Length: 116
Image (cartoon, rainbow, N blue to C red):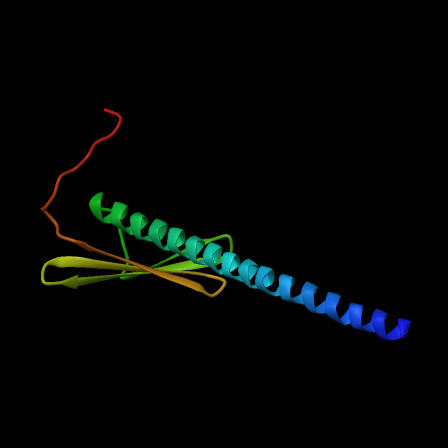
């Protein structure tokens, strides 16, 4: 009888521990995916801002630009559409892919000068 009670107690204890640990492991995976996605977004935004800066300052920009940071990549493509420039940047960090798009209309808008 004592053996039966100890086995039964072990099974119940194991079931409780597994049921408590499973959601924690899933939340860790979700947090990791969110972090990778956020890093991909910031990488895509950095690449897009680099191309935008080069365009605004008359520097040379290719149709496709690749930015590498910490072993991860962001690819930015530039397309002319009806006199405007579409800039699309895709940042990929460990499977977390984020896309950022800007349409630049030359000659429209306001320039901000900081630190004058």
